[in-house]
Length: 70
Image (cartoon, rainbow, N blue to C red; front, side, top):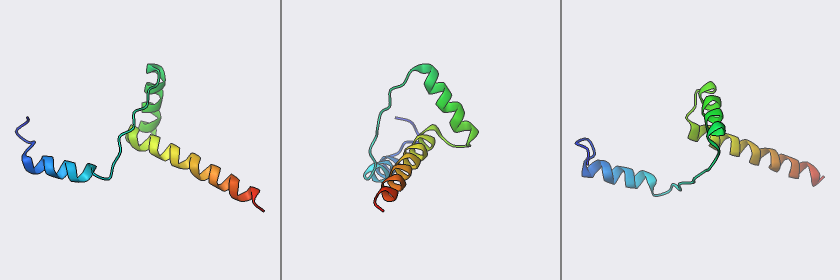
């Protein structure tokens, strides 16, 4: 255990993670590098870039479903 990882830090991390879920994404190495570069271009972490892409896709699908109801 690192000097900086105290029992208090462990408790804070556990508290932060209690409403989080870890997802694993498996991609080819060249695609992973492409995604990292794209995230950097948007000044985002790879994690946030992936979340934003998923959210954008869900909004698009929701918008398309709403237009089909009329």
